[in-house]
Image 1: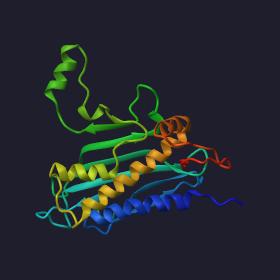
Image 2: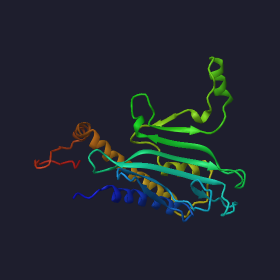
Image 3: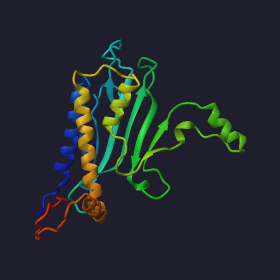
Image 4: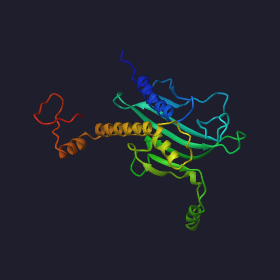
Amino acid sequence: MTENPLQPAVEDFISRLNDIIDASIATDIRFAAEFFETGEGAIVRAQTPANRRWPGLPLVRPNDDSQSPRLFLRAQYRVEMDDTNAHLQVITSTVGLLVDVTGGQRDPRPLLRVEYDRRRSKPGRPAAHVHLHANSPELAWIYGSSGQPAPDLHALHFPVGGRRFRPTLEDFLLFLDRERIFTNWKPGWRAQVIESLAEWDRSQARTTVRRYPDEAIRQLEDLGYVVTRSGETSDQTEADL
């Protein structure tokens, strides 16, 4: 019987996410997987304490009570194996920031979400997009002046990329630091997050090559490589695809 590659692939994915969190944020909460009964996929998300109404990883600022954080990082992924059953792929993902302005009296409210839906990967539809939970009088005027009802700003899908080089958890952490929304990082966190982001880029490049091998071959040949299929030989440099 052929072993199902899903579980080890998911465990590798979770390990990468937990390495990022362990290097960046002072919390003992980690990601874990909930596998579908069908064995076809899993949901990966942070396992928050059952006795806490926390919607994600707490981002405890220096002036916050660690037992009553005000900022939360929510990250959730639905993953499955690809058509070849050799590589794990993200089907949907959400990375967002939630804010508790009531000190635990009400559920935290979302501020922004970066979402990805592989099923939207069609011409004209943004596979990766941002939702902003805010108000814009100017946007309301645009709709109103054209005789249309103004939607809530968070209902709009602001495009931020396609299937491959979309925003990641690492991008989101760097955004929080760059805009000084959260600054209480572990020492040395940035270098590890940037290296993890670079590995993500390399992984997406490999995936792109698998998807478009002819384009990859043409580009390598333009760079002076000679590409041969397995089993063939060449006296010149051979590119490993």
